[in-house]
Image (cartoon, rainbow, N blue to C red; front, side, top):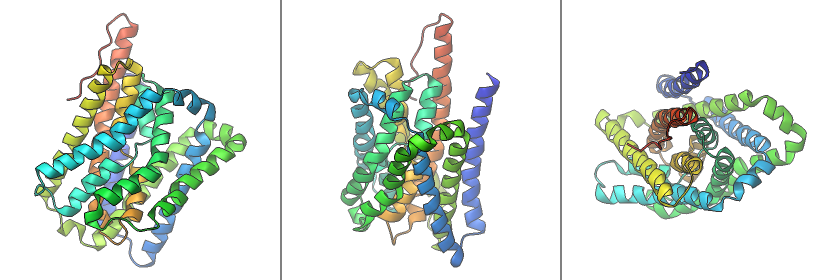
Length: 337
């Protein structure tokens, strides 16, 4: 294994540890009083900067190249906003007593969120997939999610209080406006952003850590850890793992049955199976205002960890198959397990 690959794996692991650390910090030292207000403002600012930088980083020309592959995008959008909700509803219908209503709301929340951008593209690139199409599709998924997620939440989460009437407007202000501003600013700062991609990654990860800390601080203040015992945590982990495994399996083999190339199958699998923590946490705080957001986002937190570790391993397997093919071996698609 190369040094760069080891560094990449170490970064993923350290980031996972940092997220868990934020949960621990919020448990021991939750924000209180004025600190909660300051943390909320800081989180909103971090999300706005994050989407501004993503907008400035996205090459319009590259996005247009990827946008031409409409069949691939339809497959990813169906997996993100169709397959996931169907699986989540089926799980709830089959075992409604398996989790508490709040935790089931969290599982449904996972299912209606858009895909990630950075990790989807990164894993697609590592695995040798169609990067330009993945970049376009993952970005479009986030933009589509600004409309699709509130609509799906209104239908699927109505029994949990639905969402506030101004939710869609607030999400547009938090996510879409900064992204569009970044795109408009690209001619001025695009080259600088490209040269400082590490900074974009730092802001991305730093903003998520801040959101995790503020969300779980609120949850701790509302007694989140008195509402979830060890058995429930294990059950949530199992539900998340099965959900991810099913989506990986269906997107992998389903895209093969539809005749997609190896590169496209990789993009479909990684983009179609991801759920955005960076978009999901602020969306949850707006859509589920007045409810125990910390408890509801717990399944998303766990799903995020599972998807990072699982997809990192799959990306390495795909990369190993590509290297074997370049040496004269036969490329083998990874089967979801």
